[in-house]
Image (cartoon, rainbow, N blue to C red; front, side):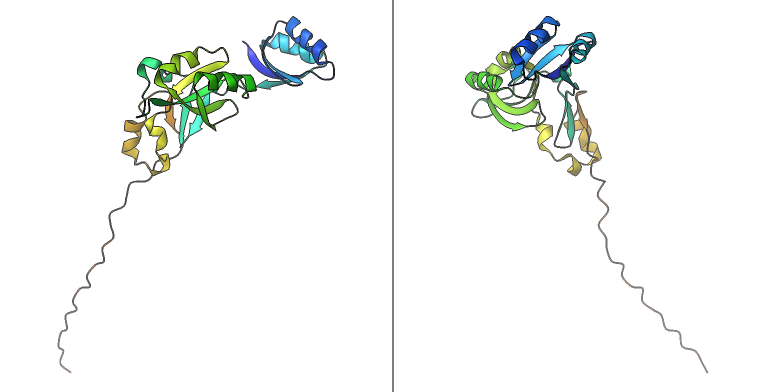
Length: 204
């Protein structure tokens, strides 16, 4: 099973980069004195045993948005140009997950395609907008791991939802609630009218 990792190249960056490539690990991006790679356990162990600093990156496709957890790896949520929902300007809101921390070259490539990045959701996931017919082109970029639609349910503060509304807003297997829904509203309080006291005359 392959794993992503950041590797610090140290003082001999060119020589150590050659060692990384020779190990068979795939170099995904270079960030100055560090590189992002994907390799198996044996390859990463070989590099670490050779004196390189290796920091494995956990695969974490779920992204928390507005009280919901969005599984960006779920096929049921995978977006496509043919199904993209667009606004009046022809723009579609999408969650774009890339292979690692945003590299300047990746950002440039996205912007050249017409993608606008609005907000970093995690280290490798971003809320973005793009023309609906560009979704497939973005999905095809080698550094993009997934593109999923920013669904209307994500705009709702889940803590304000009544329990019965959760199913209607989040029917997909890839979209689950992380914040508890609001408790059912209590019946309005109404003051009770005091009972009229009855006076009974007594004889002395």
